[in-house]
Image (cartoon, rainbow, N blue to C red):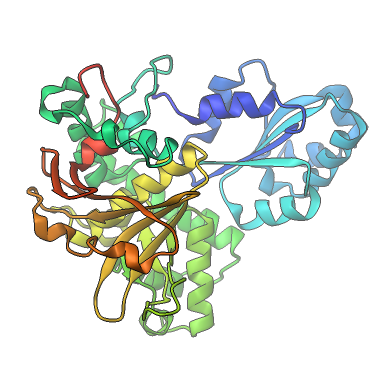
Length: 424
Protein backbone atom coordinates (compact mmCIF):
# COMPACT_ATOMS: atom_id res chain seq x y z
CA UNK A 1 0.00 0.00 0.00
CA UNK A 2 1.32 3.44 -0.99
CA UNK A 3 2.36 5.73 1.86
CA UNK A 4 0.53 9.07 2.15
CA UNK A 5 1.77 12.34 3.56
CA UNK A 6 -1.66 12.99 5.08
CA UNK A 7 -1.10 10.06 7.45
CA UNK A 8 1.05 12.05 9.89
CA UNK A 9 -1.06 15.20 9.48
CA UNK A 10 -4.20 13.28 10.42
CA UNK A 11 -2.62 11.71 13.51
CA UNK A 12 -1.24 15.05 14.68
CA UNK A 13 -4.52 16.91 14.19
CA UNK A 14 -6.56 14.31 16.05
CA UNK A 15 -4.18 14.53 19.00
CA UNK A 16 -4.65 18.27 19.42
CA UNK A 17 -6.88 19.66 22.14
CA UNK A 18 -8.76 21.98 19.79
CA UNK A 19 -9.10 19.64 16.77
CA UNK A 20 -11.63 17.24 18.20
CA UNK A 21 -13.70 17.28 15.00
CA UNK A 22 -11.82 16.72 11.75
CA UNK A 23 -13.44 16.86 8.33
CA UNK A 24 -11.50 15.06 5.59
CA UNK A 25 -12.71 15.58 2.02
CA UNK A 26 -11.37 14.42 -1.32
CA UNK A 27 -12.25 13.58 -4.87
CA UNK A 28 -14.01 10.22 -5.08
CA UNK A 29 -11.58 7.27 -5.01
CA UNK A 30 -8.61 9.30 -3.82
CA UNK A 31 -8.18 6.94 -0.88
CA UNK A 32 -9.51 8.71 2.20
CA UNK A 33 -11.28 5.64 3.62
CA UNK A 34 -8.17 3.47 3.22
CA UNK A 35 -6.02 6.23 4.70
CA UNK A 36 -8.19 6.61 7.79
CA UNK A 37 -8.65 2.89 8.40
CA UNK A 38 -4.90 2.27 8.10
CA UNK A 39 -3.91 5.31 10.15
CA UNK A 40 -6.54 5.33 12.92
CA UNK A 41 -6.70 1.60 13.54
CA UNK A 42 -7.84 2.09 17.14
CA UNK A 43 -10.80 4.33 16.21
CA UNK A 44 -14.19 2.70 15.40
CA UNK A 45 -15.26 3.14 11.76
CA UNK A 46 -18.89 3.72 10.74
CA UNK A 47 -20.27 4.41 7.26
CA UNK A 48 -23.40 6.29 6.25
CA UNK A 49 -23.18 4.71 2.79
CA UNK A 50 -25.52 1.86 3.78
CA UNK A 51 -29.14 3.10 3.52
CA UNK A 52 -30.25 0.44 6.00
CA UNK A 53 -28.16 1.65 8.96
CA UNK A 54 -28.11 5.34 8.01
CA UNK A 55 -31.56 6.15 9.55
CA UNK A 56 -30.48 4.59 12.84
CA UNK A 57 -27.45 6.85 13.08
CA UNK A 58 -29.61 9.86 12.28
CA UNK A 59 -32.02 9.04 15.12
CA UNK A 60 -29.35 8.82 17.80
CA UNK A 61 -29.08 11.76 20.18
CA UNK A 62 -25.84 13.38 21.30
CA UNK A 63 -26.03 11.32 24.49
CA UNK A 64 -26.42 8.15 22.42
CA UNK A 65 -23.27 9.00 20.47
CA UNK A 66 -21.29 9.78 23.61
CA UNK A 67 -22.41 6.51 25.24
CA UNK A 68 -21.74 4.33 22.17
CA UNK A 69 -19.07 6.15 20.17
CA UNK A 70 -17.36 9.03 22.00
CA UNK A 71 -14.67 8.65 19.34
CA UNK A 72 -15.27 7.38 15.81
CA UNK A 73 -14.84 7.87 12.08
CA UNK A 74 -18.05 8.66 10.17
CA UNK A 75 -17.72 8.03 6.43
CA UNK A 76 -19.95 9.50 3.66
CA UNK A 77 -21.45 11.83 6.25
CA UNK A 78 -22.89 14.11 3.55
CA UNK A 79 -25.54 11.41 3.05
CA UNK A 80 -26.86 12.10 6.58
CA UNK A 81 -26.38 15.88 7.01
CA UNK A 82 -28.54 16.04 10.16
CA UNK A 83 -25.80 14.04 11.90
CA UNK A 84 -23.51 17.05 11.83
CA UNK A 85 -25.72 18.94 14.30
CA UNK A 86 -25.77 15.91 16.61
CA UNK A 87 -21.98 15.54 16.46
CA UNK A 88 -21.70 19.24 17.27
CA UNK A 89 -23.85 18.70 20.38
CA UNK A 90 -21.75 15.71 21.44
CA UNK A 91 -18.58 17.77 20.97
CA UNK A 92 -19.94 20.57 23.16
CA UNK A 93 -21.06 18.22 25.95
CA UNK A 94 -17.89 16.16 26.34
CA UNK A 95 -14.41 17.59 25.97
CA UNK A 96 -12.99 14.11 25.43
CA UNK A 97 -15.13 13.29 22.39
CA UNK A 98 -13.38 13.11 19.01
CA UNK A 99 -14.87 12.61 15.55
CA UNK A 100 -13.47 12.29 12.03
CA UNK A 101 -16.03 13.06 9.32
CA UNK A 102 -15.34 11.89 5.77
CA UNK A 103 -17.00 13.03 2.55
CA UNK A 104 -16.26 12.71 -1.16
CA UNK A 105 -17.47 16.17 -2.12
CA UNK A 106 -17.47 19.65 -0.69
CA UNK A 107 -20.75 20.62 -2.35
CA UNK A 108 -23.06 19.64 0.51
CA UNK A 109 -20.63 18.64 3.22
CA UNK A 110 -18.66 21.83 3.63
CA UNK A 111 -21.68 24.13 3.40
CA UNK A 112 -23.24 22.23 6.30
CA UNK A 113 -19.95 22.14 8.20
CA UNK A 114 -19.45 25.89 7.86
CA UNK A 115 -22.96 26.53 9.14
CA UNK A 116 -22.84 24.17 12.11
CA UNK A 117 -19.23 23.59 13.13
CA UNK A 118 -17.62 27.01 12.77
CA UNK A 119 -14.79 27.30 15.29
CA UNK A 120 -14.98 23.60 16.19
CA UNK A 121 -13.63 21.86 13.11
CA UNK A 122 -10.31 21.26 11.38
CA UNK A 123 -10.74 20.73 7.62
CA UNK A 124 -8.26 18.57 5.72
CA UNK A 125 -8.18 17.75 2.01
CA UNK A 126 -6.77 14.58 0.47
CA UNK A 127 -5.49 15.02 -3.06
CA UNK A 128 -4.58 12.41 -5.66
CA UNK A 129 -1.12 10.91 -5.27
CA UNK A 130 1.92 13.16 -5.52
CA UNK A 131 5.12 12.01 -7.21
CA UNK A 132 6.91 11.27 -3.90
CA UNK A 133 3.92 9.17 -2.85
CA UNK A 134 3.85 7.28 -6.16
CA UNK A 135 7.39 6.01 -5.59
CA UNK A 136 6.79 5.07 -1.94
CA UNK A 137 4.89 1.79 -2.45
CA UNK A 138 4.92 0.56 1.16
CA UNK A 139 2.89 2.09 3.97
CA UNK A 140 5.85 2.05 6.37
CA UNK A 141 8.47 3.37 3.91
CA UNK A 142 9.84 6.87 4.63
CA UNK A 143 8.14 9.55 2.54
CA UNK A 144 10.44 12.38 1.43
CA UNK A 145 9.81 15.97 0.35
CA UNK A 146 10.57 17.01 -3.21
CA UNK A 147 13.42 19.49 -3.78
CA UNK A 148 10.85 22.16 -4.70
CA UNK A 149 8.92 21.74 -1.45
CA UNK A 150 12.18 21.76 0.54
CA UNK A 151 13.13 24.99 -1.21
CA UNK A 152 9.74 26.57 -0.45
CA UNK A 153 9.83 25.41 3.18
CA UNK A 154 13.11 27.29 3.51
CA UNK A 155 11.46 30.49 2.34
CA UNK A 156 12.92 30.34 -1.17
CA UNK A 157 16.37 31.27 0.14
CA UNK A 158 18.50 28.16 -0.38
CA UNK A 159 18.83 27.22 -4.04
CA UNK A 160 21.46 24.70 -2.98
CA UNK A 161 18.71 22.09 -2.73
CA UNK A 162 18.69 22.15 -6.54
CA UNK A 163 22.32 21.06 -6.91
CA UNK A 164 23.14 17.59 -8.14
CA UNK A 165 23.31 15.26 -11.10
CA UNK A 166 19.85 13.74 -11.52
CA UNK A 167 21.02 10.98 -13.87
CA UNK A 168 23.41 9.64 -11.22
CA UNK A 169 20.56 8.81 -8.85
CA UNK A 170 18.57 5.54 -9.03
CA UNK A 171 15.78 7.47 -7.34
CA UNK A 172 15.59 9.84 -10.30
CA UNK A 173 15.02 6.95 -12.69
CA UNK A 174 12.07 5.86 -10.53
CA UNK A 175 10.75 9.42 -10.47
CA UNK A 176 10.85 9.64 -14.28
CA UNK A 177 8.90 6.40 -14.68
CA UNK A 178 6.30 7.58 -12.15
CA UNK A 179 6.00 10.98 -13.81
CA UNK A 180 5.50 9.47 -17.28
CA UNK A 181 2.77 7.22 -15.90
CA UNK A 182 1.22 10.24 -14.16
CA UNK A 183 1.10 12.14 -17.46
CA UNK A 184 -0.81 9.27 -19.07
CA UNK A 185 -3.01 8.00 -16.25
CA UNK A 186 -3.02 10.63 -13.49
CA UNK A 187 -2.60 10.29 -9.75
CA UNK A 188 -5.52 8.19 -8.54
CA UNK A 189 -4.18 5.39 -6.31
CA UNK A 190 -5.77 2.59 -8.35
CA UNK A 191 -3.92 3.44 -11.57
CA UNK A 192 -0.57 3.09 -9.78
CA UNK A 193 -1.23 -0.52 -8.85
CA UNK A 194 1.69 -2.33 -10.58
CA UNK A 195 -0.43 -5.45 -11.07
CA UNK A 196 -2.96 -3.92 -13.48
CA UNK A 197 -2.53 -3.31 -17.21
CA UNK A 198 -2.80 -0.04 -19.10
CA UNK A 199 -6.11 -1.24 -20.55
CA UNK A 200 -7.43 -1.81 -17.02
CA UNK A 201 -6.25 1.65 -16.02
CA UNK A 202 -8.15 3.22 -18.91
CA UNK A 203 -11.27 1.17 -18.09
CA UNK A 204 -11.09 2.24 -14.46
CA UNK A 205 -10.84 5.92 -15.41
CA UNK A 206 -13.88 5.57 -17.68
CA UNK A 207 -15.87 3.96 -14.87
CA UNK A 208 -14.66 6.64 -12.47
CA UNK A 209 -15.97 9.35 -14.74
CA UNK A 210 -19.38 7.66 -14.98
CA UNK A 211 -19.57 7.31 -11.20
CA UNK A 212 -18.59 10.95 -10.72
CA UNK A 213 -21.37 12.13 -13.05
CA UNK A 214 -24.01 9.85 -11.57
CA UNK A 215 -23.21 10.42 -7.92
CA UNK A 216 -21.32 13.63 -7.23
CA UNK A 217 -22.95 15.78 -9.90
CA UNK A 218 -26.42 14.31 -10.39
CA UNK A 219 -27.00 13.71 -6.68
CA UNK A 220 -25.17 16.56 -5.00
CA UNK A 221 -25.63 19.30 -7.58
CA UNK A 222 -29.19 18.09 -8.26
CA UNK A 223 -28.95 18.28 -12.05
CA UNK A 224 -31.86 16.57 -13.80
CA UNK A 225 -30.28 16.84 -17.24
CA UNK A 226 -26.59 15.94 -17.31
CA UNK A 227 -25.98 16.62 -21.01
CA UNK A 228 -25.22 20.38 -20.70
CA UNK A 229 -22.86 19.67 -17.81
CA UNK A 230 -21.08 16.94 -19.78
CA UNK A 231 -20.67 19.30 -22.74
CA UNK A 232 -19.25 21.99 -20.45
CA UNK A 233 -16.94 19.49 -18.76
CA UNK A 234 -15.62 18.30 -22.12
CA UNK A 235 -15.07 21.89 -23.25
CA UNK A 236 -13.14 22.70 -20.06
CA UNK A 237 -11.04 19.53 -20.34
CA UNK A 238 -10.11 20.49 -23.92
CA UNK A 239 -9.16 24.01 -22.77
CA UNK A 240 -7.06 23.16 -19.74
CA UNK A 241 -4.24 25.64 -19.01
CA UNK A 242 -6.17 28.49 -20.66
CA UNK A 243 -7.92 31.55 -19.25
CA UNK A 244 -11.60 31.09 -18.48
CA UNK A 245 -14.08 32.53 -20.97
CA UNK A 246 -17.56 31.84 -19.59
CA UNK A 247 -19.33 33.23 -22.65
CA UNK A 248 -17.50 30.76 -24.88
CA UNK A 249 -18.12 27.93 -22.42
CA UNK A 250 -21.83 28.81 -22.28
CA UNK A 251 -22.08 28.59 -26.08
CA UNK A 252 -20.37 25.20 -26.11
CA UNK A 253 -22.80 23.78 -23.54
CA UNK A 254 -25.89 25.68 -24.78
CA UNK A 255 -26.46 27.22 -21.35
CA UNK A 256 -26.41 30.71 -19.91
CA UNK A 257 -23.18 32.32 -18.75
CA UNK A 258 -24.39 32.08 -15.15
CA UNK A 259 -25.01 28.33 -15.51
CA UNK A 260 -21.56 27.91 -17.05
CA UNK A 261 -20.05 29.59 -14.00
CA UNK A 262 -22.08 27.30 -11.74
CA UNK A 263 -20.80 24.23 -13.63
CA UNK A 264 -17.24 25.42 -13.20
CA UNK A 265 -17.86 25.82 -9.48
CA UNK A 266 -19.16 22.23 -9.26
CA UNK A 267 -16.00 20.99 -10.95
CA UNK A 268 -13.88 22.96 -8.52
CA UNK A 269 -15.77 21.78 -5.44
CA UNK A 270 -15.58 18.16 -6.52
CA UNK A 271 -11.80 18.38 -7.01
CA UNK A 272 -11.89 18.07 -10.79
CA UNK A 273 -10.34 21.43 -11.65
CA UNK A 274 -8.02 24.00 -10.13
CA UNK A 275 -8.91 27.66 -10.70
CA UNK A 276 -5.69 29.67 -10.73
CA UNK A 277 -6.25 33.30 -9.86
CA UNK A 278 -4.59 36.06 -11.89
CA UNK A 279 -1.97 38.28 -10.28
CA UNK A 280 -2.75 41.95 -10.99
CA UNK A 281 -1.61 44.08 -8.05
CA UNK A 282 0.54 46.44 -10.12
CA UNK A 283 -1.75 49.36 -11.13
CA UNK A 284 0.82 50.66 -13.63
CA UNK A 285 0.96 47.51 -15.79
CA UNK A 286 -1.76 46.23 -18.12
CA UNK A 287 -2.39 42.77 -16.64
CA UNK A 288 -5.01 40.19 -17.59
CA UNK A 289 -7.53 39.68 -14.80
CA UNK A 290 -9.09 36.43 -15.99
CA UNK A 291 -8.53 33.22 -14.00
CA UNK A 292 -6.90 30.20 -15.56
CA UNK A 293 -8.34 26.68 -15.34
CA UNK A 294 -6.29 23.51 -14.90
CA UNK A 295 -7.71 19.99 -14.80
CA UNK A 296 -6.40 18.54 -11.55
CA UNK A 297 -5.82 14.99 -12.76
CA UNK A 298 -4.36 14.28 -16.21
CA UNK A 299 -5.77 10.75 -16.23
CA UNK A 300 -9.32 11.96 -15.67
CA UNK A 301 -8.88 14.70 -18.26
CA UNK A 302 -7.55 12.27 -20.87
CA UNK A 303 -10.39 9.86 -20.13
CA UNK A 304 -12.98 12.60 -20.70
CA UNK A 305 -11.38 13.50 -24.03
CA UNK A 306 -10.56 9.86 -24.93
CA UNK A 307 -6.93 10.71 -25.58
CA UNK A 308 -4.13 8.16 -25.68
CA UNK A 309 -1.27 9.94 -27.44
CA UNK A 310 1.55 12.11 -26.15
CA UNK A 311 0.30 14.99 -23.94
CA UNK A 312 0.29 18.41 -25.59
CA UNK A 313 1.85 21.53 -24.12
CA UNK A 314 -1.29 22.67 -22.28
CA UNK A 315 -1.93 19.18 -20.90
CA UNK A 316 1.67 19.01 -19.67
CA UNK A 317 1.41 22.43 -18.05
CA UNK A 318 -1.75 21.49 -16.18
CA UNK A 319 -0.23 18.22 -14.98
CA UNK A 320 2.81 20.06 -13.56
CA UNK A 321 0.86 22.96 -12.03
CA UNK A 322 -1.57 20.51 -10.41
CA UNK A 323 1.32 18.48 -9.00
CA UNK A 324 2.86 21.59 -7.46
CA UNK A 325 -0.54 22.59 -6.05
CA UNK A 326 -0.97 19.15 -4.43
CA UNK A 327 2.50 19.19 -2.90
CA UNK A 328 2.16 22.72 -1.54
CA UNK A 329 -1.22 21.92 0.01
CA UNK A 330 -0.07 18.59 1.46
CA UNK A 331 2.87 20.34 3.13
CA UNK A 332 0.45 22.99 4.53
CA UNK A 333 2.70 25.76 3.26
CA UNK A 334 1.33 29.32 3.60
CA UNK A 335 1.72 29.95 -0.12
CA UNK A 336 -0.74 31.40 -2.64
CA UNK A 337 -0.69 30.34 -6.29
CA UNK A 338 -1.31 32.71 -9.21
CA UNK A 339 -0.70 33.05 -12.91
CA UNK A 340 0.47 36.32 -14.49
CA UNK A 341 -0.27 37.55 -17.99
CA UNK A 342 0.09 40.95 -19.60
CA UNK A 343 -2.03 42.29 -22.44
CA UNK A 344 1.03 42.37 -24.70
CA UNK A 345 1.65 38.62 -24.41
CA UNK A 346 4.05 38.20 -21.50
CA UNK A 347 3.02 35.22 -19.37
CA UNK A 348 4.24 33.34 -16.31
CA UNK A 349 2.64 29.93 -15.83
CA UNK A 350 2.85 29.89 -12.04
CA UNK A 351 3.67 32.55 -9.47
CA UNK A 352 4.10 31.30 -5.90
CA UNK A 353 3.67 33.99 -3.26
CA UNK A 354 5.65 33.40 -0.08
CA UNK A 355 5.68 35.77 2.89
CA UNK A 356 9.01 37.28 1.82
CA UNK A 357 8.61 37.29 -1.97
CA UNK A 358 7.78 35.28 -5.08
CA UNK A 359 9.01 32.18 -6.89
CA UNK A 360 8.15 32.16 -10.61
CA UNK A 361 7.82 28.95 -12.64
CA UNK A 362 7.62 28.33 -16.37
CA UNK A 363 6.52 24.88 -17.55
CA UNK A 364 7.79 23.49 -20.87
CA UNK A 365 6.86 20.12 -22.35
CA UNK A 366 9.97 19.74 -24.51
CA UNK A 367 12.96 17.59 -23.66
CA UNK A 368 15.68 20.22 -23.94
CA UNK A 369 15.57 23.46 -21.95
CA UNK A 370 17.09 26.57 -23.50
CA UNK A 371 17.68 30.21 -22.65
CA UNK A 372 14.59 31.15 -24.68
CA UNK A 373 12.40 29.34 -22.15
CA UNK A 374 13.30 31.95 -19.54
CA UNK A 375 12.43 35.01 -21.63
CA UNK A 376 9.23 35.82 -19.70
CA UNK A 377 11.05 35.41 -16.39
CA UNK A 378 13.71 38.03 -17.09
CA UNK A 379 12.84 41.43 -15.66
CA UNK A 380 9.76 40.01 -13.98
CA UNK A 381 10.66 41.66 -10.68
CA UNK A 382 9.64 45.09 -11.99
CA UNK A 383 6.01 43.90 -12.13
CA UNK A 384 5.85 42.61 -8.57
CA UNK A 385 5.14 44.20 -5.20
CA UNK A 386 7.62 41.98 -3.32
CA UNK A 387 11.06 40.62 -4.27
CA UNK A 388 11.37 37.93 -6.91
CA UNK A 389 13.30 35.32 -4.93
CA UNK A 390 14.01 32.81 -7.68
CA UNK A 391 12.75 31.55 -11.04
CA UNK A 392 12.55 28.03 -12.42
CA UNK A 393 11.94 26.43 -15.79
CA UNK A 394 10.58 22.88 -15.41
CA UNK A 395 10.81 20.59 -18.43
CA UNK A 396 11.52 16.99 -19.45
CA UNK A 397 15.21 17.79 -19.87
CA UNK A 398 17.34 15.42 -17.75
CA UNK A 399 19.96 18.04 -16.83
CA UNK A 400 20.11 20.95 -14.42
CA UNK A 401 21.36 24.11 -16.06
CA UNK A 402 21.53 27.81 -15.14
CA UNK A 403 19.74 30.01 -17.69
CA UNK A 404 20.46 33.36 -16.06
CA UNK A 405 21.16 34.83 -12.65
CA UNK A 406 18.57 33.33 -10.25
CA UNK A 407 16.97 31.31 -13.07
CA UNK A 408 17.47 27.54 -13.19
CA UNK A 409 16.19 24.93 -15.62
CA UNK A 410 15.33 21.72 -13.76
CA UNK A 411 14.10 18.27 -14.80
CA UNK A 412 10.49 18.24 -13.68
CA UNK A 413 10.67 14.66 -12.37
CA UNK A 414 13.67 15.66 -10.26
CA UNK A 415 12.30 18.96 -8.94
CA UNK A 416 8.96 17.40 -7.96
CA UNK A 417 10.01 13.83 -7.22
CA UNK A 418 11.18 11.99 -4.14
CA UNK A 419 14.77 12.47 -3.01
CA UNK A 420 17.18 9.59 -2.48
CA UNK A 421 20.66 9.23 -0.99
CA UNK A 422 22.31 10.09 -4.34
CA UNK A 423 20.02 12.96 -5.32
CA UNK A 424 22.27 15.83 -4.26
